[in-house]
Amino acid sequence: MARALVCSALAGLVLVSLALGAASLSEGGGWLLMASRFPRTAAAVLAGAGLALAGVVVQQVVQNRMVEPSLTGTPEAAMLGLLAVTLIAPGSPVAVKMLFAAACAMAGMAGFLALADRVPQQDPMLLPIIGLVYGGILGAIATWFAWYSDLLQYLGMWRLGEFSGVMQGRYEWLWVVAVLAVLLYVVADRITILGFGEAQARSLGLNYAQTRTFGLVVVSLLTALVLVTVGAFPFVGLVAPNLISRWRGDNLRTNLAWIAVFGGALVLAADVVGRLVRYPFEIPAATVFAVLGAAVFLWLLYAAPGRSHG
Amino acid sequence: MIRIERLTYKVGPAAILHDVDLRLDAGGITALIGPNGAGKSSLLHCIAGLNRPAFGTVRIGDLDPFAAPGSLRARAVALLRQSPAVVSRLRVRELVAFGRWPHHRGRATPQDDAVVARALEIFTLEALADRPVETLSGGQRQRAFIAMTWAQDTPWMLLDEPLNALDPRHARDLMVRLHDLSRAGDRSVIIVLHDINAAAGWADRIVAMKDGRVAARDTTAALLTPETLGAVFDTPFEVLNTGGRPVVVAR
Image (tube, rainbow over all chains, first blue to last red):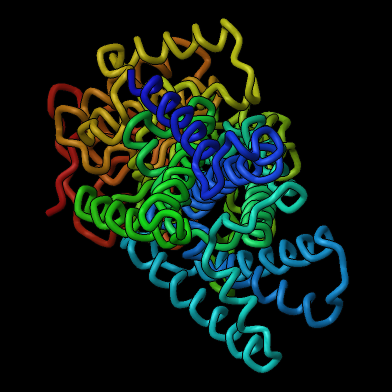
């Protein structure tokens, strides 16, 4: 029942998103669909799925449900990388920029994990707060750097994720999200076992360090992919995995697909709402989502005081 | 048999275990007792291959737990750590099934499912099989985790203070089950116990530790003397006998 609901909600949102826009489909027809509406819809679904998956992987790696990539300094580190590559080699192809941003995201995430290993686990709220501060510091460096090099405008674009600029030829990198999702599904059991904590995971014969590094790489890639193509979306990685976990439990072998679908549907919904509220003008999807995400975050806090797992 | 030779384990510059030599025979229950900070847990983690010692060797049969690949080690020895922090929404059946992971590494066979079903049966978890672990009581949760450790189907089961947070009834139930398991098949249990009387009632052998060293090791009846316990715990003890079973009381 609930599964059918999620699937039909996503299908309905896709149809609305394809039909919705300032120009009428009867004039532009197929070309409009292929060049703008479909890419925009696909980008929203892929970005949402990628962020939701990144969220659940981070949560397993640090054994804390209240963490998500934007609470680990990862997007800020990716932005720093993107700024650097924009300054040093402005003409480099998107793939190079993306890889450099991903490499910086990895460094940022590794820094966060080093911090996380030193934080006592008794209070699950401590880690997200530390992540927030850590991300704030990296973000401040990025801002200073951008101001100094006159790139503040770019930074503003990356910080506020939205899909109005998505066109054919400008979002295709996001399909890598689908590839990474399949890869994550293959190792879903290992990622679940990571959530048992180091001693238990190793007692089950898992190569803990290797699996953790794999998780770090995937999260960094997902974050960088989404950031470079459409910008940052806080809360998606928090909201989608938590709601799915409440609904279906914690076995990633059976949940991963739902987390991805739900994340995609949420971001697409945020985009559709953002296009409708002041039609024909738009509100960035990230802004819409932040309102919803903040509400759900508060609900999670009050519904489950101090609940973590690991 | 587990053979431990000249084992020294350090955390930073501080030695937690000094030069431990120990042989543990297969079969039955071996209890590790000793004051807080004696190194019981560390020793258990060294045997499980999770704490890498500074010096010395551990052999589980012929297997070196530090050199063997994880998948091989996890089929020789299973450790349940002290009060697992997982407050998880995995269902009990899913949790127990993860005990089979070292065997199938992701593709469960019908045999794996059969072992899981057997584990649920042995630990009377069938009625709870579809409940999320986080909704269980402390006793039920501990049982679910021990069922997972059992499902790992290793000759050696290492349990780190599994009686923590269990009331007397659940603690007794658990010890009875472990006692039966260690009699029935080829399972050997090494268990860290805080409650000396749990060891007195159910263990076949006791290893007493103090300050990172083995202070005494013997059969349960032979080890539980006022002199030995007094020396290990720095507290005067009285050993009573109730129906052929030793009962230890701190004086």
